[in-house]
Image (cartoon, rainbow, N blue to C red):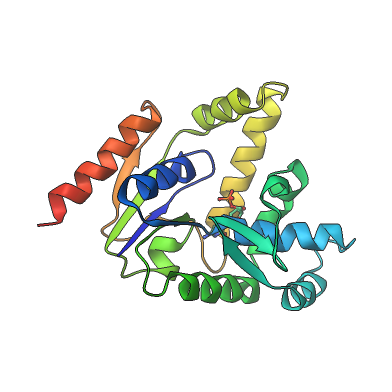
Length: 212
Ligand code: DC
């Protein structure tokens, strides 16, 4: 079974997807980590992350895998380094190359083969698994998402974080391929005023209601 959740950064989809996977005993797959891993690897090797050809060449030269829910580059888990401000900034332009998207999509589909999974990202309900058994779209206002980010990293400046979120939303929504959008028939959950447990409950209720 595939449960797919899409939505913008900070909408709570990663945490909730992980919680749901744990509750159901499903495999958790975060597709954004793959784009982050290609971005991190390029940065580590001194490649300009905006140089599409070099980024692609590098991506083809490394192997991404998943171990215990963590993405590994050439067998080594880099989970702890995937969320640096630089990776945050460049993962979106890296993910806008359709050739990189094809590589990520085939890896993700291959890993998911024969498994019960909860996956999340920007296009898991539209492109990667359009026939997923359950499809959700999480949303929340940019201001709320900026506050959530500040709660995780208190030293940051609110306005800078907010502008970063607005800019990343724009890039994610305007991508030529794999753009962030609500899939036809997806269940939309506005998480702005909900706790993670409440969002989780809504997802589980939707699964119960439609599983007959
Ligand atoms: O979900 P995240 O913030 O870890 O994703 C990192 C980047 O990858 C983000 O800029 C959006 C992009 N992404 C994507 O284009 N498609 C996906 N399915 C998942 C993430």
